[in-house]
Amino acid sequence: MTAGRLRARIALDRGELHLDVALDIAIGATVAVLGPNGAGKTTLLRALAGLHRIAHGQVVLDGEVLEDAAAGVHLPPEARPVGLVFQDHLLFPHLSAVENVAFGLRCRGAGRAAAHRQAAEWLARVGLGDRLNARPGQLSGGQAQRVALARALATEPRLLLLDEPLAALDASTRVEVRRQLRRHLESFPGVRLLVTHDPVEAIALADRLVVLEGGRVVQAGTAGEVTARPRSRYVADLVGVNLYPATAAGDRVVLAGGAVLHAPGAGTGDVFARVHPRAVSLHRRRPEGTPRNVWAGRAEGLDLEGDRVRVQVGGAVPIVAEVTPAAVADLGLGDGGEVWVSLKAAEIDVYPA
Amino acid sequence: MTPSPPDRGMGVPPAAAVVAGVGALFFVLPLAGLVWRAPWSSLAAELGAPEVRQALWLSLVCSAWATALSVAFGVPLAWVLARGQFPGRRLLRALTTLPMVLPPVVGGVALLLAFGRRGLAGQWLDAWFGIRLPFTTAGAVLAATFVAMPFLVLTAEAGFRSADRRLEEAARTLGARPGAVFRRVTLPLVRPSLAAGAVLAWARALGEFGATITFAGNFPGETQTMPLKVYLLLETRPEAAIVLSLVLLTVSLAVLVGLRSRWLGSA
Image (cartoon, one colour):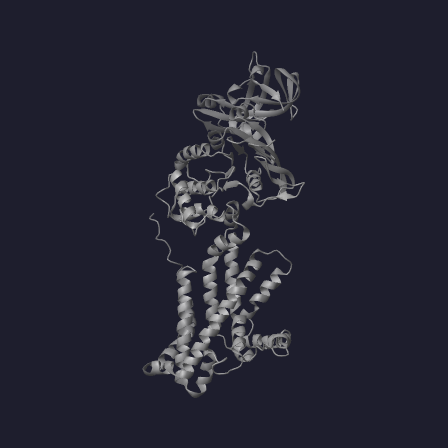
């Protein structure tokens, strides 16, 4: 049964993009679809809203079939109980704020006065009761975003979609708008789905993350689950850890490039090996002692990360190490010198792919 | 080093300025000639003459009808040209703008061959409905529409193209059916373009001469519009011709200046 849920499988091709995504979200939950540019995030939202026809799959919202490719069912956007807040808000420039919000109500048959009154209430709810007659051009980015949200909510959808809700705002207002947005999202009694390329936005606004890359879901779960065990280079880069797809064989893992790392209890089969940059040590000369994993590399780049420095080391196993600025000077890393890398076997976190 | 002041345009070489001045004179002198020879003392009397008022009134009626027809048929046509995807679209666009470059007399001949009593469509209009367009006021309207509509189509099509289609999608997600989207979002977005196109079309219709005299003839009160009257009066009463010319000139100038500042943005 799909009562109280959004259950969808959406497969479609658009140019280079081959999107194939399954979603199952309960009413009252907020899910963020996180992914790099071109992953298909916006296409996914547009398909859910009915602006793209899907090639395979179906969209079922709270028991109502919105789309079923096999059965040839495709409800047009105007017939779906779906609200969409566009990235750059797309307020109608020829209408005032209150007329923008009243637009959907008028389309659904409300009289002019009633629609206007309800729209004014919605604007008051998002804190814009004093900007009813402002034109979109006179609103700040944050205000325009709230008008767009009120406009989408006024039609009382059961699925609310937000496309990069904070991307069009400047950094100074983003924190405040994010706080307000979270409050408004919590008061919306339906399925909430937002897409973003900003992990902070995703974690701050959503209960669960769905990571989309190249049109596919590569990882899903709570923010903690996703960041603790990245399953793609994209997430690993977001979290700031080294990640290697590998094959486990007993106490060793064989990386995709053929290099071997010692990792006790790695098990068998396809795995990911995760190494935090802080667990990587750099040395001028080949280190003596316990570490089993030692290899020579070349420092290829430096990035300041807080009060530490991240060193990209090229070689048989490309890896990022985190060291102190003093160590950078001691090791002579500034001019891209040769360096020895050591890694304790116990610091390698291995989990099934 | 102090930063140089912002350029107020590139320096104009003196030779170019002289040639440009000659070019400008070429436009200014004929107007100056009109103003110079205008019978200012008898202006009101000339305008009040019955035959002049008749031509003025007919011109207003014909140009208004031509504008209305251009809007009624030109807006959907522009929309199809801007949004449609069909073979022959480029050819259709070229055909709809052809009257802008066609000599109006040729347009008049073509209209005769199409809508004349033995024309391609005219013979059936006559046989089935008893409608005869040549040498009637309706014919004058048709001729004016033929030359004026391209201005509306061209301007409106540009408007439809530049309108942000995502706003239409936003309207769909808010519950607007395609018809409502067009009425409540697309049309308001392109309204400035439509207004500019309609005014341009009206001004063009007001000045139409060649196609009118060829297709509709030169009958006072029926097809004799202002430009035709000007041409005729030049033989008999040059002062009256000058007065009517001044009227047409003033209208054209007002339209251009008004369009520039209100819709096309001042440059």
